[in-house]
Length: 324
Ligand code: MET
Ligand SMILES: [Zn+2]
Image 1 (cartoon, helix red, strand yellow):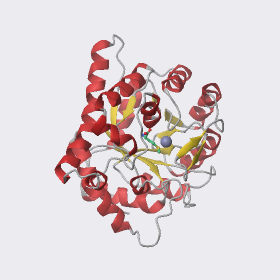
Image 2 (tube, helix red, strand yellow; image 1 turned 45 degrees about the vertical axis):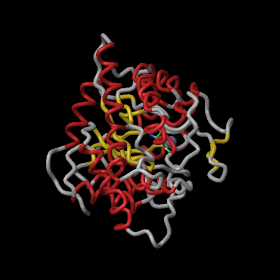
Image 3 (cartoon, helix red, strand yellow; image 1 turned 45 degrees about the horizontal axis):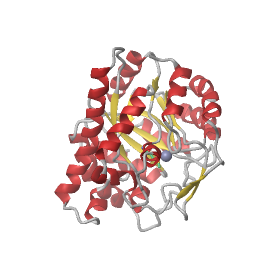
């Protein structure tokens, strides 16, 4: 296992959760809201396209989620990669500056929100790192199938510089999102150690059966990798239908005492060929929220929404949780 000791990032997370009243609210779908405001994200950069074309819109969506009650806002860097920016004609330096900008936009939104609000609550900025499959933009973050040519080293080389740049931008957390397989979890764990990343991280996997992560690798194995990495402060699941979440929390609990995070999607089906969500296959905000107390009781302490959830979903989660 490739992860060393140092400061205790788990302590940072536990202190945040204590301050927040024992549980905290993660924001909702960023890309979903950018699209709701008119952004066209049909692009290999997806939501990260707005870092170039409409940063003000990203700031607005962060603010909307803060106003809805989020304690954690996730940056627009999910599909932002140096390689992706380079293929759009940007230089390496420009690509790195765009990554940095994703963190700055979220930090500024937090500052604006904190200045304007009378009730104080802890707010963290989480720098998103999407999987290699997200960069490929071929839906493979939902299959976890990268092929035999992609090795641990391929994945580490792909993520290394981006992780350094995001960490140097000074977010409160690094959010490894939608991790589709064990190999990528292992790559992240080794990179955190080898680069001695000082920012606490969370590992969030996705599943399409409530038992395994999407590649078919066991969630128990994946969550164990996260558990044995001292730099990982929380472990969980995102962009997965609500109906699978309860079993996945119980399963993660078997292998870790770290805080559990969950931010399911709306349950709608994603058509990877058409690159769109199939409407009316999901649950309503009301149904989504009816799960919240069960998730909390099963052991999740960080709860939010992923694709196709909105500030309304987050407002309802925040009311249901009533942490702070
Ligand atoms: C495919 S999961 C997407 C996660 C990302 N944070 C977003 O909401 O845009
Ligand atoms: Zn999602």
